[in-house]
Image (cartoon, rainbow, N blue to C red; front, top):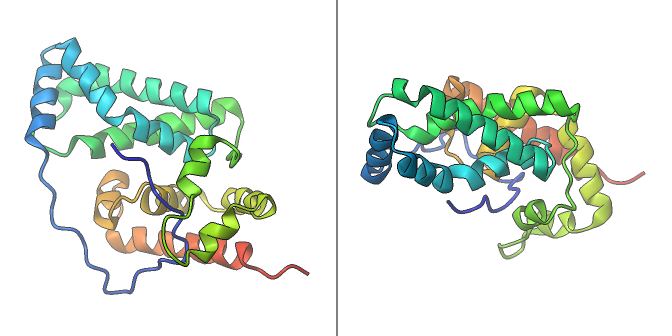
Length: 210
């Protein structure tokens, strides 16, 4: 899976934002899931290789250090291994996986006593904040160390729901309707949390210095 690309705080969609069409699971993933449900260790390892970088990225974005993010990823896949027999074949696997991973990340955050402590000096985070679009003024400013510190502080000021929605929508680039399925929220609620998070970040990060 490709890593999330940019921190698109200014990319607030219009109220008429188009939702993505209902997704169908990749038959290759369904086949791996079916094999994993029978105890096929190779199939389960393939599922881990397919998704582990995104789960680690989720942990990093939510404020974990790299070691703790890897621990959260491992914990998530342990839970998946224990309960994959209950998963309904043909459904979207990553939505179920993300729901489990989010709980694992929060558990690791509580255990590590790190709340909103994103390390923007981590190369993995820097790669996600890299400006890849022409005229990306905000991304360019994020390269400045002083602004990076302000981003860290502002992310810590988001509510739990705002932070996870912002991470999934803007850092992991998951469509609104899929986030709703993952978090079991309506698309209206997801959009509301996302817009609130963007507004808070925009007003605080772009606030003129006094």
